Length: 170
Image 1 (cartoon, rainbow, N blue to C red):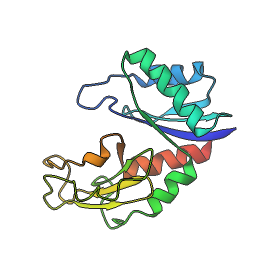
Image 2 (cartoon, rainbow, N blue to C red):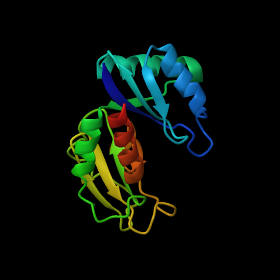
Image 3 (cartoon, rainbow, N blue to C red):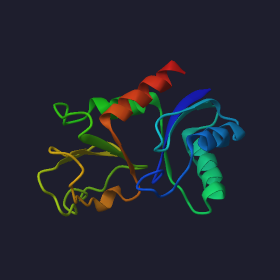
């Protein structure tokens, strides 16, 4: 059995993609995932399964599509993968609620930073399968547009650390 962290895209953000976490837990349990736990209402779920990461992702995305009637993307990582990404954060001095990791399925394109628009003091860096963003003064007024992040999903550093801890408790 493997423990995975799944990060859903566009769930409960700005009133779109409503998915109660109780429904997400039930969906994961129906897929045969064990020790299912969710964290905050933004599409974070930790579970155990014998499936590979790719098969767990495919099963979850199929169930989410059936539930929502449209594709809902998921990023699946192990606790160790997330811990490596967090440890590689180039903005370690940043307040953890003002920095995010944008998780992607694959490495960001080499020109990912060159295509960023509306940058006003935000700092960005590329990771293995992540884009790091430090919002400095905060995210509320940021108009930052990162085309390479379109297929990814962002979590602040506090959330990433909590998900790693939850997965390691499993």
